[in-house]
Length: 422
Image 1 (cartoon, one colour):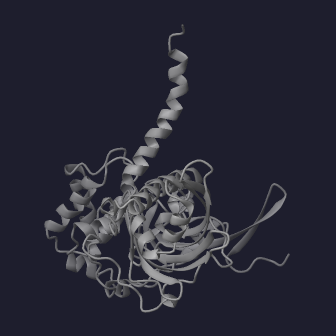
Image 2: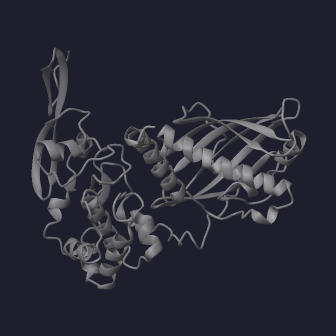
């Protein structure tokens, strides 16, 4: 093995050669030089080596935001940032904001507005909230919620946190001078844009007032399907529609009618060359995603089957989704009913990737399909006025119902143990 280069070191662990390198960075104003493995994450360096345990670890996938710190003045996920990439960077943790004027106001506001309960998410919340105050001093409630959507909290319901940020914004601190000192900063090691470029980005209107504008062409939106990508979600499910086989197949040929039955979906116009563009708006807990996307539709009249290849992106939150849906219709032996069999393969990235756990997604998909099937039956039964199309799909209640069902399933065996026997 060639000797290690300048700043690198090698060690032996359990009979294996371990390559280490020295990294120099500033943490909370203090210059630090540490020897780390290439795979060491910044969060592990902060917690294990520097004992800065205010940076919390929960998902360790860059999803929940509990580990958020400032890298060169910008919020970043320390659990997915390699420490070796932070060479000569300036890192500020929650401990480093102890005497920060904005953070002090936020701590007080969090207390007054009941913006914390267990406190596990609070350090990351404070770092993100401080960034909102410094970067968007005129943020309204919708914008605050959007900016906080990358920080998850299992306790508060977010209302108190939002009020705390609003309270500090309303106090009209002399933020211009504070913010000005942080605007001329180098590129962060995590690859985020310079602050001045962020400020030049377009203002985001409240999601309740505006849907994403369609792109000029399908090619600007996405490539169709997964291509060579490997899915992180695979679902095989089926549902029934209480209408005759041929009738349901003809209905499936009307893309606009089918889209109107799928909650949260809105098309930009009729299909063109078996391609269609539209939006899908979904609310999952604190995350409100408005996907702009496109799809290619394939049908086989001989086998009563088809494929939908498509994908989309949420320009506001950075989530992306690509997928393929294969479906087949078959007549039921008893009565005028049709069985629809589905195979869904999808790849999600960004904030929505946290909902990729198979059982949760399968249950959620089942509920969506049940709503879709009921809407199709209503359309075919001349009860189309019961179907509300184009409205955002709110999954929060579904997730709560799923949690209740899971809890009930766990408790039921205990109940049976204590039931009196005859």
